[in-house]
Image (cartoon, rainbow, N blue to C red; front, side):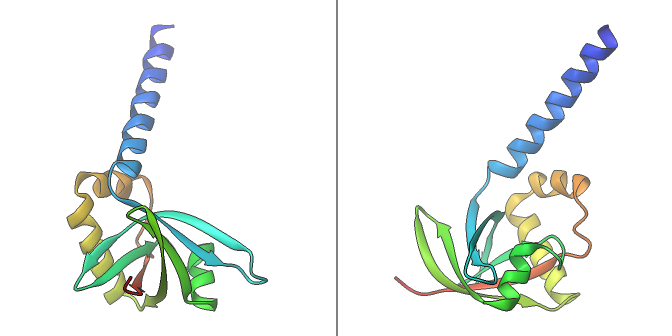
Length: 133
């Protein structure tokens, strides 16, 4: 009984750390359009460099990345408002290495923790340029 309770406690602790890692830094919403015009929203991390924002698709097969490939016009919820933006995948390995460096620099231990849980070895960098408002 004690070992079951200890296991449950450990599982809850790990889940809480994961939730903290995922949600305690800046999280944005990317709204893309699926074929046929249906919108899809994805929560993700973001990093800035030289007036450009960078996000990551964990794999090239991710639905939001496929949507970006088909239609680069996206909306980005950031700073309490929607912005109209254009997104473009950046080829690997340069894109992958670049976005990994930016996200690790911004999110620190959180990025490391999630990296232990999710394989991002095939991730794709997505460069996001938004209209000035």
